[in-house]
Length: 323
Image (tube, rainbow, N blue to C red):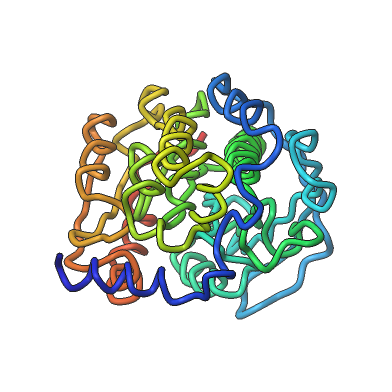
């Protein structure tokens, strides 16, 4: 196994056995939530954001906004209110939604990226995902989702919310885009293809299908398979149940984005979480898209090659015309 991929697996295993995903098992309403993913077809209606008074940071206008989640009926009470932070270099600047990676709570790490995008004339809208940060439900330990059902509820709500935000910004006259890394990259890809209007998209560390990520990759080391196996009857039964549910979490359930030429993908050659063939499959499913490789793993690819990731977002945004 390449060194970078081995590093990914070691990092995923570092937490204690009791600080992992799905400590409460598969959870209630799993079939219903899988069905919600299976039946989702997009497009969605635009979301109206209520903005607070802006402040200036590093010469950039920054404000926070809230909205009511259109998926509130599928979320815990604490996640009903959505939260975004917007960095705007000019009133008519293009806007790119920047989604959180797996277990990324708050906006702190993404503000550096937002400031950099603003210096290139691109506004950034940092999005807080349901179950994370200010939207974390009571009783959840950090960003560790308690059940598999929570995972499906979070992912579907993220796609619906992000697509709705993109619709709202587009209708207001902005050129719009979306990006994210890892889980954020997958959600960015889904949100882009759920839109029936031009969206620039830069999925980074993303895959065509979520199934191999959860059942074969390094992420397996961050899951409570002992709990899932006890509920399903065996490890193999638990893995099979999870894989069957994940069969619907495939981007090829949809066509390509409205402007596939404005899709720039970034993938790591030795990614221990996302198989290289999954990134290639996503690229093939979007004819006209561009795939850029970095010689690294999942973690090292982002840290050591951040300039490639940043350039992908700028280039994708530049390939769209203003609405």
